[in-house]
Image (cartoon, rainbow, N blue to C red; front, side, top):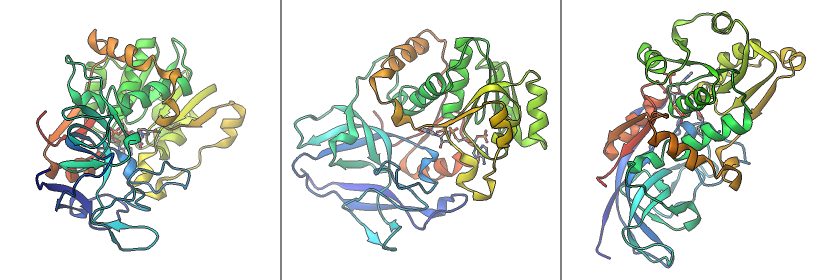
Length: 361
Ligand SMILES: NC(=O)c1ccc[n+]([C@@H]2O[C@H](COP(=O)([O-])OP(=O)(O)OC[C@H]3O[C@@H](n4cnc5c(N)ncnc54)[C@H](OP(=O)(O)O)[C@@H]3O)[C@@H](O)[C@H]2O)c1
């Protein structure tokens, strides 16, 4: 293999609170020769996700890069151990990506295969653990980027979280937070397709209009304009909430619990308001939870990597093909744009799935 240079992103400091672009830098390395079983991938698209920020319990999957605590994956290049326990500055950051195989020493992959899996925030990734990779069944009619959003983790999170955890019934009243985001917009759309009454909240007027006019939500509001979330939800749901799909935690969770109907279900998908501010953690009224027999369940998308969810792709592709599901993507271009794309997630700058295109297909 010819000598190849690779640009990749690292963090310059442990990230706590709001991420800033100055906390990242681009480094250049020479790619080492491939070893047995290695697959060299040119990265085409990288998914930008909030999960890098919160420090996770020991039970968390042991392969994802985490910025504020343990940077878990042991990466062979450029590792400078700053703090023995916690932080690997200069280490490549990984996340979900779609790429093209450039060279392979692995029998399962050959040049020009299109793959999806754990790639680095980099131009190229040498994948050593083939279990973190899968060949994509690319569908000519859809862009490859869909495999990071609607056909990827966001889609499965929304589908599994809504149908499996919330166990919805037609006509039920559903509330979704971060409803214009990658997971939230799909939860709302799946709920509408089932025949639920759906209200979402989001952080700008433009997002609220889009939810109502483009995605067919029954109503939506800008939570940043509301001072009393409890009475806001009471006004939007005079007959109570049956299902709350929580992407944000904090005061919104507290207010939703106060407005739940008996036997209501809360799917705790994410608590993004805590990721940058641990003071946001609140305790909902547990007396409400007991007397109204509310079910609150956290989940991980990996819970749905089973055969039980084999209907997710056919159902979702049919919906997209027939125009019943609208695909919301927010794509930036170039490896240099990753830090601002990541920062923007925590400031509500994205509309739908945030992706960075690293190279042309
Ligand atoms: N359980 C799982 O397996 C799993 C899988 C994927 C994602 N998640 C979680 O699901 C949630 C949504 O993820 P996503 O990938 O779809 O991200 P996303 O919703 O596309 O982007 C994050 C959005 O959250 C909102 N936000 C940011 N800071 C906030 C705050 N302090 N309070 C309230 N809202 C805030 C912003 O929209 P606004 O304009 O509305 O503020 C922002 O656009 C996250 O909590 C994520 O960690 C969980």
